[in-house]
Length: 334
Picture (tube, rainbow, N blue to C red):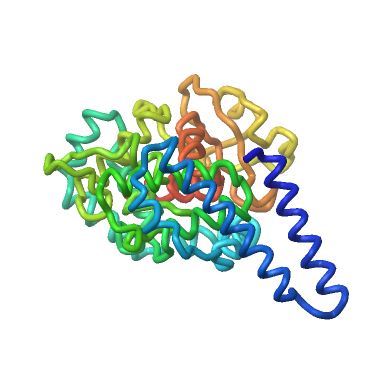
């Protein structure tokens, strides 16, 4: 299914709903029935592709897709992302509370030996591995409670980036089939992310690691597998352990805000000459790194100089708030 075709179908459904509301009738049963019928046809086509093109067993495909219904809650959550509803200050207070910092420090100490071994193999500093673990799932305590198959099917049929989520749904079916897992127990985030490191299904298949050597890449229950999988994926994305993510900075009073934004890159020394300083007022590092200035909440909010590893965090999750939160927590785990 092409992206343009999906967009047209979504627009058509939206028009039907709008007409119903204008007429004062609300979304009619016929509109809802039409959508359900269209979804059933879409599932049938996807099921055929999964079996014939991807090699998923017919039994697994039937168990996963038969009787599946759209999940409106998933679309509501997709439309309530934090960068549209919270300031960065509010977001950081929510996702990096003192309890999460203290828990992270405890786990960094408890798992120091395995983290150092993982760091040597994948060249990722332990504090960033633990910070991602904390932001993604509160160190495994919140892995999501949405049925992964239903979430991905809803997003693939009705949500934004439908082609991406359709591919992830196929990847999930392959994963469940390979692991002989009941689709009914595959729970995750509203977007279909899985396990303590909240990997999308394609990343579970490609980057999950069996660190403990038990024959399973268990990102749900094995701490070693979770930490090594996180580091392996970061390494694959281009992480450089001789750098860091960036730093919060102070701007001079007369700073030109047009220099902020991901499209502008300058060496640290150039920012220094423009009056940008560390938060304690000291000079910026003297390393010749290319950096970008970000003002997530505008001139009156926090300012950050970010490095190449920040771009890696954005490849993990395309959210500036998320990437800043990971960096913010990593600093407090030192």
